[in-house]
Image (cartoon, rainbow, N blue to C red; front, side, top):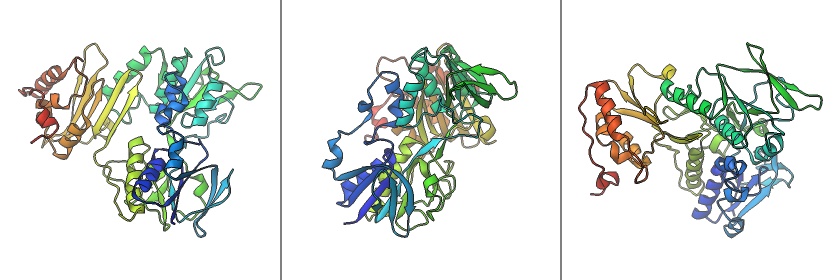
Length: 449
C-alpha cells in the first residue's frame, strides 16, 4: 500500500490528508511537533481572550483520525533523506514514505535585534506561543506593559488580546501608517484612528533598536532606533511577519528559496516530494499574487488540489481571484481583487473612496481608467457576498455596473443599516455620474434562470 507522509498538521496538511482519504485507501501519516491534533490557528486569540477553550479550536473529535485511518506521529522532523525516502524524527522512530508532502507552515521573523532571544520575547503563531503568552502576560500585574514590534495582522491581534486583560500596549510600526504597504492611505488612516481609540500607544515610523535584559535574563525594556527612547516593558511581541519553516530541509536536495520551490502542480524538484501552504514558494508568482502566500484559505486550496494529483488526477493549482478577510479590533475587513497602496498603484488605476462621516466604515474600489473595469474592492465594516463579487471580477464588470447593483453584493444581516445609497451618491458626485441603485434581486444574486 502506498504510504503518504505529511509533515505538518495545519490547514494545508490536514486538508490534503482528508481529501486523499476521500479519494483513496492509501496509508496516510501526519507528523507534527506542535500539537497532537489539528486546531484552528486563527482561533488562538479567542482562547487567550476567554471566548473559548483550546479544545474548542479542534474541528474534529479525537476519534476522527482513527476512524479515517490517518495515523498521527508526534515529533519534530530534523532531516529528510530523499534518496532513501525516509524522515529522521526527534521524538519518534524514523519513518519511510512513498510520497512526501511538506506542509510545515511559517515561523515569526527575527531580524537580529540584540536581546531578541530573551525570556519574555515571543511571537504569536503556534500553540506553544499561546502557552508562553499565558506565562509572560497572564495579567497586568505580571506584565505592566507590552511592546509589539511589527504592524501586520498578527500584531493587531496580539494588541487586542493584551488589551482584554487591561495590559498597556505600545505598538511599534516601521511604516508611516498602519499596514500601508497593503492598504491605500485613507483606509490605513482610519485603522490608525481606530487603534488609538482602543487606548493602544501606536508609534508610526518607529523601529526597534535593542531589547534589554534584567538581572534574571528577562526583558525589562526596549530602545527605539533614531530617538534612543527607552520604554520599560515585560513582554516584547515580535510580529514583523513570518518566514517559511524550512530550516530542516537545507541538506535534503530539495530546491529552496524563501520557501520550498514548487511548480504549478505543487511539485518540488525531487520526484514524489511536494509542498503546500505557507512553506511553499511558487517558482513563478501567479498573477499579482506573492510567490509565498501565508493565507489560511490558500493552504486549504493547495491541500485539496494536491490530493487530486496524489490520487492520480494531476491537477494544476489555480487559486482564482485574490480575496482575504481579517478583523482590526472591532472593524471587519474584506478585500476582493487588487486595490494597491499608493506606492504600488499603477497610473492606469483610479480609486473611489467612501467613508462614513461618524462610524468606522469605508470602502475603496479600484478600477481601470480607460475601460472602467473594476480591479478590486476593500471594505471595512461592510460585508459583501464573496460569490457575487468574485463573479463580477470574472465577468470584468465596470464600476458603474457594480454601483448600480451594489445591493446584490451586500451580505449584512436583515435590519442592519445599509449604506449603498450614500456610497452611490458620493460616487456620482466624484465622477459626474447619475447611477441609480437597483433593488436587491435574488435571481441575479444566485444566478437563477
